[in-house]
Image (cartoon, rainbow, N blue to C red; front, side, top):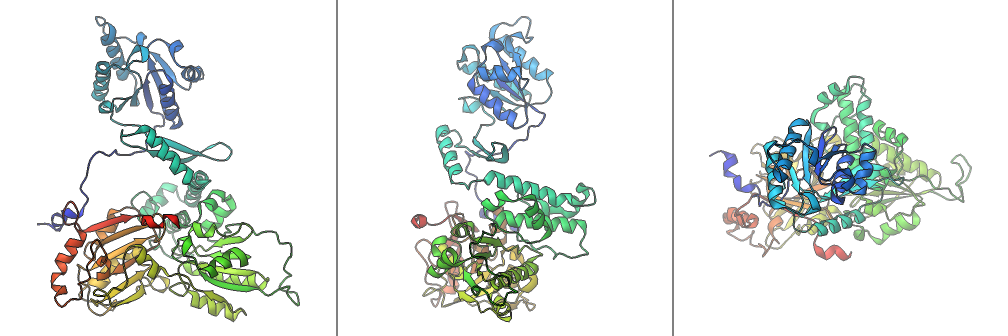
Length: 613
């Protein structure tokens, strides 16, 4: 039996009852609306907003239509068709003549893509038999239909939709829609309002600016855009094909091809889309967009006006000495900031130079009077961005400013704090290093995984999945009683798994190979509201990660038997004398669900107990 068939149970079982939610582009195509009341006017507006042509088909003539439809028809925004005037069968009367006229209309007009039946006959009264006839005529022409208040006569339904606007009232490209699949239209509207109220101000403008940046990134090519985009390939895709913005790209060089240049710039756009605060994206100027695409410096907030200007560094004495604070922001949740870090950000900083992984929720705590800059450690640009931030830190400290160099997690756990300390010291500044809660410890806890546990894991090891300048690193070998925590390796997951499990270690592993059934958890955006945990085994985790679509960096891996120790009723018998002999059954029990044994499990969001923090 093929391996794919053996693992069929790994894939989710469709439950039915959902809608295939699509976003139609209807430029130059026709939406035909049956009816002329206020609902028909609402459907007409939605179609016009999607650049569709709109035909209104109704009995009683234009004078019987609602005021909005009359107004739009007078301005040629919609085309009104009098149903009574359509040619039907010469022998038909009443409904049969209307149906004949409707069929002749569909046959005579090219480009009708959707039909919305808001009224079924004169007098605005529902008529089931007539609606069924209209529906079957449309189906005969392969045109999808929506029939108001008759779900079984609907090929599609409308979501409760919000299109976002700029402050000046102009529309942005961002839309969201909510559907309850016919179970509560009013509730769908309420849910939509709740979602909109929780989104950052300016989110529509942020989408607009990112779109402009993508266009700028592609427009810089000398070749025809389609030729360059074909060469650039999958790196330019966002919807499902490129699953992580952290996929490595070649470093910037003078010899790169146009395709490589476009790929790098698009990757940088993806990076700021993932990491920068929405408020910053919404406020970006054309100059700042060009700076990002060129890899130059970009400021999150303008430098505030100082009432006590710091003298030039060429002065004999400074009004006050500068100071550098090297600060850890923890895994991401603002409540996990230490008091020292909170004080540094809110009371001491004149300038904050932040790594890109620090979330917007933490940056939002910084007073508006404090200048903030975010490092552009994009793939292919990390080394240059690191040097840029260190130079900026020293330059600001030489002007007498208190500079907070803000890093995610703990600065000395793969945060490059050591090289920054030595660089600052060489330039005359001894930085104060403020520890942070390391994601290596916090993330597993948020995922319900203890890195050590009696009867399961007697020790743990933290390592990185990628070495300096993107080189491969040597990973530790398998020890049953040890938990392995791998930071910064999810973008290279297939290579990491191969290094851990291959019989021939080839210098990429120091010790025994890991059994393929060893549990692993990938934790993405730990401690944040959109945290996701993918639990599986080394055998199936690559497929599991591919199955969830777009990745959510930053991510990390927890490997070892501690991953299943606290699941459900728990399992702390791993290190028992006969524990190893039951590993296969142990893993099956851990991953079992209502459909039987599975190959992975996906958990979304934080435990509800964190809602009050």
